[in-house]
Length: 190
Image 1 (cartoon, rainbow, N blue to C red):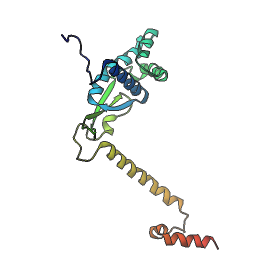
Image 2 (cartoon, helix red, strand yellow):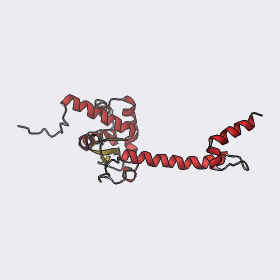
Image 3 (cartoon, rainbow, N blue to C red):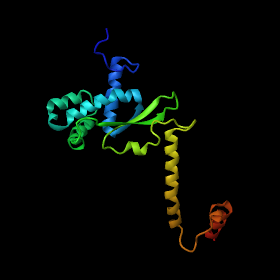
Image 4 (cartoon, rainbow, N blue to C red):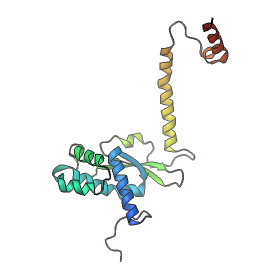
């Protein structure tokens, strides 16, 4: 019988699953957010909540530190967790993580989510159309890259105008043409 075996298998052996979840929870505490599939995020949330519960409040003693160290793989991340958990999660008794759907993975159409610690930023505001299907051929990453490149281009345009000295500003056609560059080089070589 399968009584009291409630964990999700995730298509892996027990040791592989444990190692994967340990690495994922370490990355979650190190970076504040990770992107993964829904099923992995649902398996990871209870583990992350348990570790934060160990680290915060009156439970932060040597025994709790050692129990958390058995799961978290990096000492710096463990120190960071125990250092900031009491202040960051003081007003909460549970629900230390937030999950927001980001769409579907292009390779196998697996539903993806961003799992982040609460107070690490507003993921729901930054992820557009959470849980909605994306148009065919468009991914969230591509939309973010396009928006980022447009923002960089907008920031670079005023900087280019400021660099040109007053009175010597040429029209955009003259400045970008190869003839204008040759003419400008010829004037300097006198």
